[in-house]
Image (cartoon, rainbow, N blue to C red; front, side, top):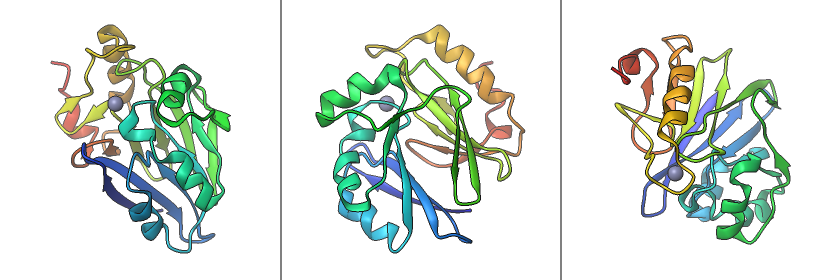
Length: 190
Ligand SMILES: [Zn+2]
């Protein structure tokens, strides 16, 4: 599994381009802004999915501009689709639910619904590679804001507890800031 990250927009959202070297197939997570930067990092990969971890504008705004270029379906959780549509004027191509599987080339991801920052926030987990793409739920040393419309502090606490049960060696790729591990964040709620 190859992972490239591109910081996009004023809020420096981490957009991830993840690919399977064997098949040259990949997915893009959270192309909030700067589609030309994202396209140039995609290079000759065949993009099979554009996945939005939640509906905030800094994660979704360029999703459909990218779709025009790479011809891949845009996916989000149903609880954040309306928020996405507010920024993009578009509907999603596929709605992702908790425990859904997303297979791209030889890579397999499972959706972990993690409401709290927003109702429809989710993470993508690759069990084989021990990698978690955590959106704005879990950051290095911190977690996402819970004072926004659609936020819920108790939901965030439950979601973080769920994530902190993943294997400690899991590498965490957040929606903002640097990468971390589950091990490094194990005392986040204490
Ligand atoms: Zn957010």
